[in-house]
Every structure is written in C-alpha cells, then in structure tokens.
Image 1 (tube, rainbow, N blue to C red):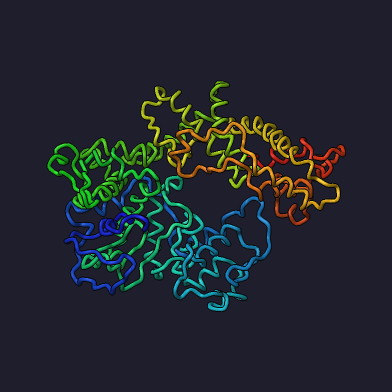
Image 2: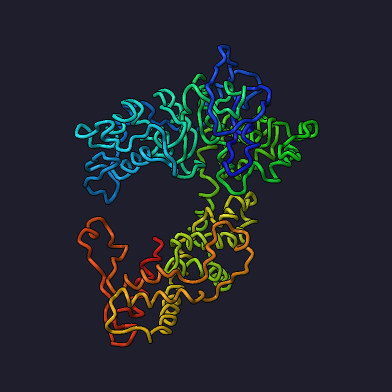
Length: 580
C-alpha cells in the first residue's frame, strides 16, 4: 500500500499497495500500464476474517464522524449559503480561457488547480483552452457551474468541494493515468474526510487523489493487478471501485494512514522505534522481514495484512487506532501510545467523548499563549540562531516565514525542557520536526520582541556596509544605477552567524547563504527611492490607487540624497518583517 517517492528504489513498489492476499510476482517497470483482467469471483475483502484490522460495522459506526455534504445539491447549497470571505471584492478573471465574474477567490483557485497539471508534465487529453473545448461561457461565469460543464453536473461540484476544503486534487487533467470519478465513488472519498479532523489531514498542498485509468493497472503489480485496490500515491484502481461503499472508505483511509508517515522526513514507519515494536529486520535486498514468532509473543499484529511489512503494519495499526482501538490497545499498547502521540496528537477514538477533546497541541499552545518567560540568555540564544533567517528575509531570498519558523522551533526546544515534568505524556517529536526545523507551537510574543530587536540592528548593518561604497555614488545617477551600488553589499557576510552549528549540518531546508543577495539588495534600494506600499495598506483597493509611502529627504549626505534614511529603512524593515 505504501507508495514511495520515485526517487527511492523501485524494489519497494510491490509492498506499497492495498491488495487481497496473493503470491508475490516478478517486478516490471513501475511506469508501464497493462490491461486489467478482473476476476469474476472477488474476495469479499471487508468480511475476510482478520485480513483487515476493522470490519464494516466498525467503519460505519466510527466515533466522531462529522457529516459533510456529499450530494451535488448539498454542496451547491453549502456554497450558496456560505458568507463571502473578509475583504472580498468583485471583479473578473480568466482561468484557462474561461471568464469568471465576481467569484470567490477560493473557488477561483480550486478551479485553476483542477484545470492545471500538478507537476511539470504533459497530460494526455488535457485541452489547451478549456473554454474552446467545453464552451463554458457565456452560460457559466461561476466556478461551480464551470466545473459542471467540464467534469459533469454531479461530479464537478464534488471535485470542487474536495479541492477547496481539503486541497485534494481529483482531476484527470492534473495527473497522468487519471480517469473520471463517478459521483458515488467521489462521494465515498468525501466520506473519508468525515473521519479526519481538518488539522490532522496529513497531505501537502494540491495532493493527488485520482481514479486510476479504468481498465488498466500498473505492470509492476504482475498477476496481482486485479487484487490491488489502491496505493498511497493515492491511486484508486478498478478493484477499489468494485467494493462496497464502506470498504472503499476503509481502503482509502488505510492509504491516508500511510501518508501520516510519508508526510514526515523522519518516516515513522521506517524509524528504529517502529521497527523494534514488531521486530522488523531489513535483509540484504532492502526488504523487511519480521521474526514473527518473537514478534507475536510480545507485540502481535492487528491484521494479517499488517504482517506484510513494516509499512503495512504501520498503516493497519493507524487504521485500527481509528476504527478498532480496543484491538490495537490489546495487541500492542506500545504501538497504540506511539500512534496516539505522534500521529493523532493525543486524540483518542475510544468514544465520542474522547475524540471530542482538544488535542495535545491545542493544550500546549494554550499554555504558551497564557504567557511564557524566557531569560535574557535564552532570548539571545534564540536570536543568534535565527539572525541569518531574519537578514535573509530583508536582503536575501527567503520569506519572513523562515525566520518565524526558526524562532518557533528554537523556542519549542526551551519550552519542552521546561515543561517535561508538567506534561508527563509530552513527546518532543510530536511538537517539532527536527530535519525541517519547524514546530507545531507558535510563540507570537517572542517573535514580535525579537523582530523589534533585530530590525534596528539590521538597518544599522546595511547602512554601515553601504557607506563603504559611497565613493561610487554620483548625483547624476539614475535610481537604477544608484541601486546597483547598493547591490555591492552582496560581498559582505551577515554579522554573528554561526556557520558550524550542528543544526545547520543536519537540517534539510536551511538556507546556506551567508551574504546578501544582489537582486534583493537592489530591490530594497529601489523600493525605498521610489516609494513603497506598507503591507498594512496593501488591499486590492489601495493597490489600484497605489498610494505610496514616500521616503523623506532630510539632508544631502550621500546615503540620504535619494531619500534613504535610517528612519525610512527601519520603517521598511519592520513593515516587511511584520509577523501578524
């Protein structure tokens, strides 16, 4: 079931899909498709004893299932009654040749994603111009209506709902080998999201969730092709379509469960902690085998399918946690507790009352928001760790969110050490991702305080560096020529940057530029000499009128002759690094 990234060895492909029990076949190219031969007599999967970790009744009666609109009429009614977003302004926009008038921005974006390739690839059969292909205008000038013309009267709004609400893309025009969903199939997809809290959806943006090309499967599955239901990519095969509504939901939830691991660089299901729980051992071929006799003595599997490999073990255990928690708790309390803390943030599904409780993250954040004191030494340590990210957001190529993430991550390290005794169940891995250097906790007050400290420091550093090049500044220069001189700060190194720290060596997303970017420095200069629009005033209306905040000329000194003073530079920096 678990579908690995294509950058990983293809040897793992056969273990990455949900299928009925059968023998393993030799492997073919993963990208090759073959016609699908469906057996007339299929195994009633949901009823097969112990193959899955939960039965149909447990899925149907799952606790804390939140009713969502699945029928087209209900979805259209939902959007008809939904208030417009704050700051909404009318207007018109073209999407793939289709004119939309006075449409909600979120629906414009949803339609745009459904009509665009999700990756840099050519999609067979995708029109270059959807207006010419489907004659949407003038009859339709709204996104939902356009979706009905393109994808079908029933399916279109269902696809739009999934895209807008959950950032899940089901379009055959966005991914290779995708086909059209039926209305009943996509209704079951929506029903799966009734089982997942929005904040616990494990997908990245514009997540693929497609009906695989009908009549075909992947050649890599060999003679197992007719038994493969789905994979964690997520691709849903014809065998999935033939299942009951409840079985479709179970299978798709199982694929979602894989993504709870795939969404983390740490890969929970490949971690030493997880492998040890069922005594999984990797052999010389890169495949995993469990010493089952030993494993079954202490930590039995929740299903026979979970015995396949550690990845199916993980997905089946997560699925059991959601639908059959008593089974998982009885067979392995360690697995139960690991999933409870790392996957579901402390949320349990043993009863409606239990799964209605706030998550641990919510409880921890409440503690943080109530006020947390950092010593001067701790603040300085956090500031020194995040200084580079701050400077990069001004004269580099990084968004200010990188600085925000840095402060949150570093502050979380301090907070969790201070509160480990107060919260006995606190697991550091549930609070932050070490490789990505991001945290689930947000320290708004601290970020504001450090911004106020770093802004004047950065302004003074920039002006001090630029002064070195004042001899090149001439009164007759154009603004562009003048700012070319500013770009020379690219040759300087940011102050107080520790380039040898351990987190820099081990982190994936750390920007390793220790000097300003030439284009960013030039752009900052041009913004100041030409005037800039404060972000607090950057609404659609104000941008149309383009009311600019002019820099004031206070003297004729070289750095000020174009209106760039410390005051205006500081004002600019504080505006551009505002973390509201």
